[in-house]
Image (cartoon, rainbow, N blue to C red; front, side):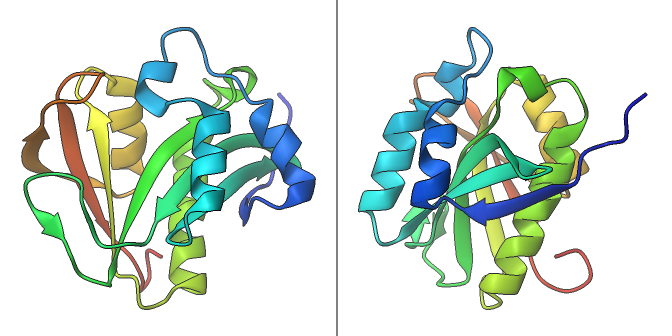
Amino acid sequence: MPAAPALRVAPVTPQLADAVRALRVAPGQTIHVGDVSFNLADAEANPDSEAMAILADDRVIGFYRLDYQPTVVARISLRSAAAVVLRAFLLDRAWQGRGLAGRALLACCRDVSLRHPRRRLMALNVDCRNVVAVRAYRQAGFVGCGELVFGGSAGPQHLMLRQLGGARG
């Protein structure tokens, strides 16, 4: 069995942007993560968002965006400057099913803790039916807060939170 690739995350640069736009998810997953090109352009246009690439041995295999503007992801408000919202997390369909999502999420959390040490909480919404994603988020230290968010195109979503900083990152 080949060795697991070295994973890291990095802001999307112009050199990485085409590889990010080329990412594809499995059929039926777009409803959960949205359109990659749209999310990339939207994050690049918003000074309070950051487009991030997931790299395996320096090859782009995934994407996510971070929103730093205090926002509401559910009925509870994350108006604290210490919060960041994780959105549109995905791995390319060719890289799915290899146990990389949890590792990529841990790399994401470590990166935010290092580059933005004042950020203490990461939040996300995940479709209740997306059990694979919920499992990956739990493995990376996210916990459900018992709140469901309604009204999204994918159906009800769990609000999940994760503390940043300290030993866990």
